[in-house]
Image 1 (spheres, rainbow, N blue to C red):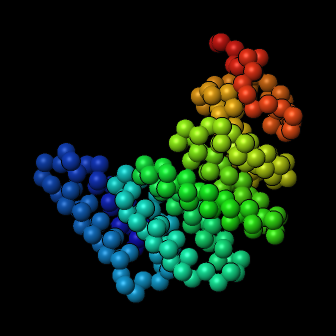
Image 2 (cartoon, helix red, strand yellow):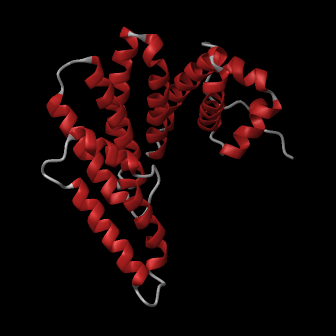
Length: 236
């Protein structure tokens, strides 16, 4: 039901402004009213709210405000229901990470950073207790935190966090390449972009130019995170 309403809102919203008859606008508005009514029910269970929130696309213009509102409610519910169990802490950490992404999508960058920090702190605690279970989640939350810091222009703070995320993903990719290889590459490119203050495309060129050197730099504790001229991509 929720997924159908979400598709209706998305399908009609872009056309609503230019539709002379107004039928598309009306259809989109009706779908939004029904969708909001579904999520605003006073007897709505947290489990159902989680499903509804999960049905919203990660990147959505038509549903951006609703996504932030619902994810905020999820986080608040989880905080009130915390019993200290690992299961509850995992759900809260994941929801905080998702909330950070929703806030970032809505342009609320400071609030997004705060929630990304809370998510990473929780995953750090969980990983210390059970590394095998939570290392991938920690890597993901670190990458999100680095991106949120970068969004606010805090490159120096983002750099070591992006590096740690890439290190974790590369380690995981060595164990399970099918699951983590692409994520390892993506986070490595994020770190290279921050390290050298270059674009994503330039980071790709740099990695292709000398992949061994970049992997060595990633894991070399004595390596500086400052750009070096020799590492810059050569002009094409």
